[in-house]
Length: 314
Image 1 (tube, rainbow, N blue to C red):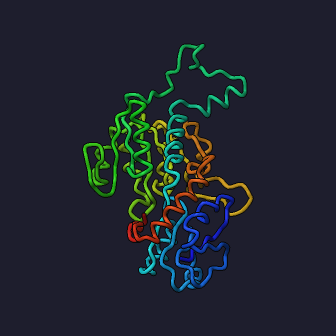
Image 2 (image 1 turned 90 degrees about the vertical axis):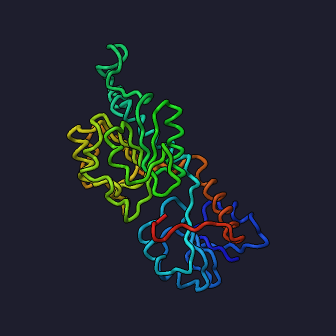
Image 3 (image 1 turned 45 degrees about the horizontal axis):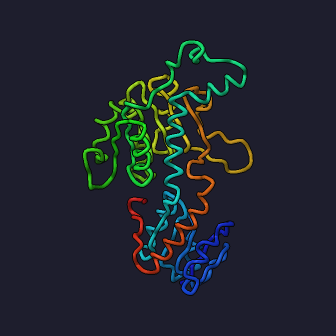
C-alpha cells in the first residue's frame, strides 16, 4: 500500500516504522500516481486527480474542514478519516479556559504585575468574584471523545454534568441535541466540543445565548462559527452572562501581520479569556498524532477502520 504524507514533520518515524514490509511511504507536494492513502487536511481536486486509485483520505487532525467535506462528497469511492489523538489536550484546555474565567486569572495577573492588589484579594476580605466549580451544573455540548473527557474532569471537581450528543445511545446524562434549549437555563458552565458542520454552524445564536443564566461561563474549544459572533460579543459586553474562555475564532492570520481573532473587540472585554487556537497542542501531541496515524493506516489496510461521515462532516 502506498501512503503519501503531504508534509514530513520530525515525528514521522512512527508511521514509517509500522508495517514496513507492507507500506511504502512518500512525502511532499508531488503525489505518486499509485497512492492509495493520502494524508492531507485540505486537499484540492488536483491533488486527488494525481492519484486515480486513491482509496482513503486522512485529515490528520480533529474536525473536517468544510471545503474538504464538500470535495469528498464528489468522490464517494474515497473513504474519509480524521484523528482524535489530542482529545486529552483539548479537554484540558477547555477546563483551563473555564477555570481562568471562573477565577478571573487574567485580570488579576495583569493587575498584580502592575503592583495592584484587587479589592477582593484575601488580604482585603476574600474573593467573592471567584466562581466555585463544585456544585455547579456543567453542560457539555458535543459529548464525544473530547466532551466525555471534559465531563470526567468536571465530575472530579464535583460538578453536576450533562452531555449533548447527536446520536444515541442516550442516557440520563447524555441527551439528544433536540433537548438543548430546555437545558440551557440551568447551565452554569457551557463547554462546547462540537464539530463544525452545516447543522452546528450558528447553533449558539442570540436566542439560545439569552437562555443561559446570568452567571454562566462558556468555554469554547470547538470552532468559532458554532457561535453567532455578534450575539456572543454583545451578551458578554452587556454582562448578561458571566464570562467566556475562547480558543477558537472567526478570523485567522493570512500572513505575518497583526490579526485580531474577531471583527469585534473581544480583546477589550475583561470577562473574556483568549487563546490563539492552541487547545490541541502539547509537549506530546505531535508524537501522539503520528502514533494515531500509524494505527489508523494499519486499520485501513486490514479493513477495520471506520470512516467519518461525509454527509455529517465527522
